[in-house]
Image (cartoon, rainbow, N blue to C red; front, side, top):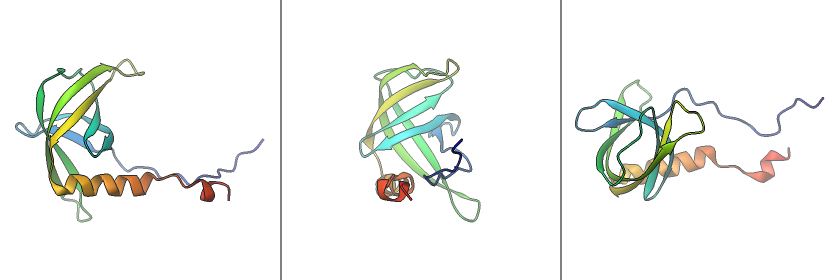
Length: 119
């Protein structure tokens, strides 16, 4: 049986948690991101058409966190394939330059290069 992996995999030490910016309470985890949106994975459904003040806490090398604050509207929310969680799609209305930088870093980190996969 073939057991060698051909694609290098990167384990994340933890997921990027998403917080309510006003209360600083966690509301879920970042599922995916794009230039104008994100998907949140949470234990409760999000209110559709509501505006949210979100905060991403990006870990720094020294153990501290850098906050990226976003204003976003929830466009949809439905139960995840795992019945204990919900997926919710957000349209990002306001975000600082650091959000675009984060997207670039995540895309680079998780980029799939088919040429390297055949090695």
